[in-house]
Length: 283
Image (cartoon, rainbow, N blue to C red; front, side, top):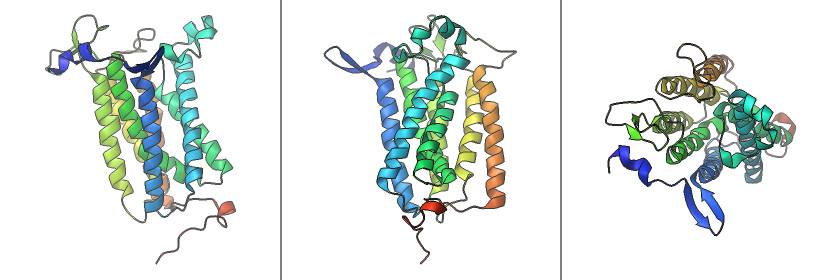
């Protein structure tokens, strides 16, 4: 089946249970959090952090709530503020769509950070762990965007062009799949290869790589992705996605420089809880 016919055969609803619809987008979030938790548990063992499984799950739940709330509020405030100011009753209408990665990232950091702080988990190590597994959620999320036929790209005559139902009857770049490949698969492979080294690389390394590389990939794809219709281009070819990704590149580069200079080792719990979960001693 040619790629440009795929949209005709994809239903945003994965399955129905009576009147209840289970959508691929919701399953993408669920898969990202579950697989992310399993990967963090694996890294916890590989890095000898001695984090308790229940503590890891608690932080992942905090990340999940923070990501969902942040993604929605980010979209409301950054992408469609005028509409939601006029229709505040629609702010929590998640079924209508509208989620922002950058808002979700901030929410995930706040939610996971608060949970980790309460459990006395080393914040930078938890941030690194979260950034290693984040591309998994990005991969599934972008695939769900493709299934939904949303966030498509500019017109193209290339063989990769896809005809989306709402795309004006012309072939377009499947920018969702580009992002799934770059921000999801490629970035995950890069981070997991870096994470296999033991003892693990210094605190801040993985968050730095994630922010830096994600920002670069996102800006690159934005050149072939159609901006949200209510915003359009901010100036010249610059989109909101590009503008929000520039600080990520700066923060990522700064974190990498800081990690290289300080070389702070990864650890599970902060000093105040070290008596409950001692750090493994070298053999």
